[in-house]
Image (cartoon, rainbow, N blue to C red; front, side, top):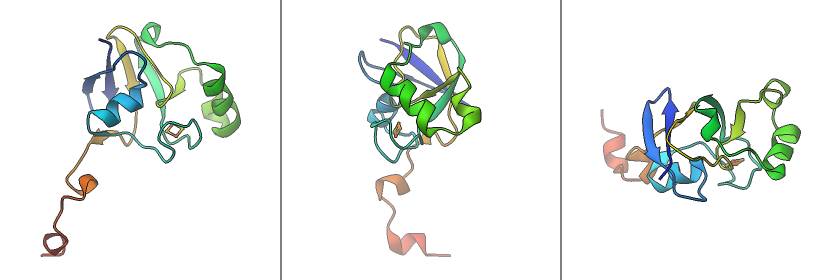
Length: 120
Ligand code: FES
C-alpha cells in the first residue's frame, strides 16, 4: 500500500488505492486543511511535493484547471504544487509539505467540555 510523508510534521501514513493524500489523512484522523472536502474548489488543501515525485500520479485535467484558475500566480506556476484532495500516489517515497496538517486534537472532535475550556 502506498505511503506518504508529510513535512514539517514528519508524519507518514498509508494511502489506499484510488484514494487521495488528503482523503487518506482525513480517514486516519489527521487535519488536512479544507473547506470543500475534496471538490477541487477551495484550494485550501494545496501542497508542495518535496521528494519522491516519481511516486506522484500526474494531475488530471480537473486538477490542472483548478490550479490554473483558482491559485495565486506564484503557486499556479510552480510544478511542485498539487491539490492534496486530488493527489494520488504509488510506492512509499512521496514527501509533501503541508502547512496546517496536524494530528486531530480533542477540540477538533468537540471532545472538550466547555466548562473545562473556560477554567483558569
Ligand atoms: S479540499 Fe478543497 S480543493 Fe482540495
